[in-house]
Image 1 (cartoon, helix red, strand yellow):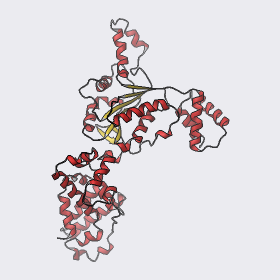
Image 2 (cartoon, rainbow, N blue to C red):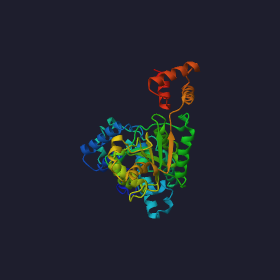
Image 3 (cartoon, one colour):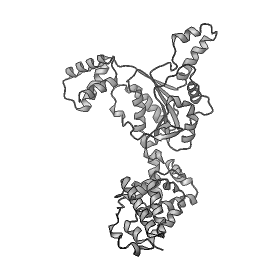
Image 4 (cartoon, rainbow, N blue to C red):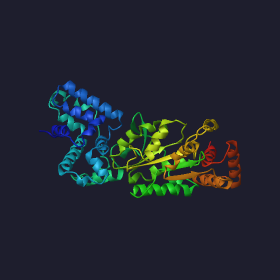
Length: 411
């Protein structure tokens, strides 16, 4: 039996990493190998379809990377265990199967165009046109497969450092249409990009570290004025601690009734998650308000141990209250209970961090620091005067306003 047919049979027997067949490139390659004993026109059709696909996917010159990357980002019992550092607890039969699958994928990645063409059972019938057929280049394998020598140690180490499945490929996600979807262009903001509000950020930073270290930690509400960096602080946490297995999933507040489904998706995963709710506020009688209260404390579908809720709001009293609402309560003998109800949600966050608009001096310090980061060569007095005019035109000072002013100087 030639090498190509051996690879085909081994690919047929994939078990632990069988999910790689959900990736179009490997699926098309397997279909090509399955045509090794077919009529010439069927084999050549599969060959042409495969080359067209890898050209579209941009991997005609790095096929080995495409194959082994599919394995790296596959989620299965081995990759989940390795991400959590418990792969050694798996039965030896599972580990042997995982090793066999990795060896098979690597062998497939190293097959050249010539290997596949000469492995065709009726090669003599296509011998004349074979030289004119397009060729692919294998190139290098993805990270952990480069030094694969039959041991799973290097691959397991990669999963421990990067997570598994789509959570290894991406760092940020959003709950949409009843499922977790990756955010392809996540904000790259870093903690070093901030100026001011060190005390507030340090509280969030310490809480996040405690969460990752398995220590006592709290759900966190970042509350305060617009443009003060509340959302940016949360997003920076995901960037700061990605290498420690932290991921962020944003759930829109109008989808909070679906929180139990989100919990079911992440509870079994070895990574840790910030569940992010941005710009949190509710109207009276909002059903999602009750749902979030149950999640924060006392509900059956509470957050799992591998997740924390971080929410931002411009309002300390998250439930919006109007004067007309107070007027309706005049005849209510339990008015105090109703008022307590409007405060009970924010009180259920174990940690509340307040962000207020900066004073003039703090605002100008932020402007000067940002100008220095950007390498602006403008006299301080001129820069500060322009920043004040810019803030007055926009109705107030804030870090967001400072950033917008600095960016406007490059226009």
